[in-house]
Structures are given as C-alpha cells and as structure tokens.
Image (cartoon, rainbow, N blue to C red):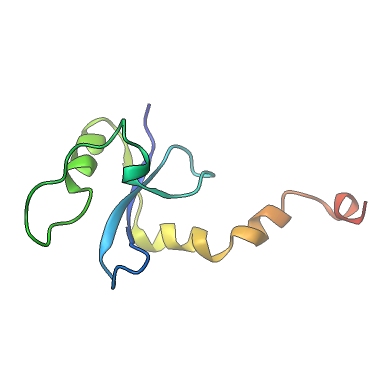
Amino acid sequence: MTGQLCWIPKFGGNGKLALHLRFESFHPWKTYTAFPGLCVPDYLIPGGSQGWATSQKLLQAGWTAIPTNQAQRSFDRPISSLINLFDDDELAA
C-alpha cells in the first residue's frame, strides 16, 4: 500500500519539521508515529529530523512526497472543502 508523505511543522515544535503521512489525498495528515506498522526507528543523530529513516523506507516503496506548502494549504480550508460537498438544496433541508 502506498500513500503520501510530507514534512510539516510539529505543533509546538518551534518550527521543527516532522514526517506526516496519509494514504489518500482526502485523508488528514497524521504524524508518522500514528502508523506503527510503517515506522522504522529514527537515526540516533542529535538534532536529526524525526521520521527521516521512515521517509527513506516509504519513498523506496513508492510513496509520493508532497511539498510542505501544498500540505499546509489543506489545513487552511478544511471546512470550506466540506461545505462544497453539498449543493444549496441539501443545505436548506
């Protein structure tokens, strides 16, 4: 099974990036640690990127890397994208 991976700033991480994954473009991004079956141990490098070893494994398996700025746009408009699923008649009901 393949999916998408992206480096997104960690919440409260002072700008540090962490690997995030999702299986489909309509799924939310989740940190790589939420997928224990896909994770491999991080390299023991002080200050190293969290998820680097896992990203290498997944890229070799055919996963697609998504640019950070593109992934962050999905956080900017989650509600508006849901509203567009319904037409005006369905919302009025």
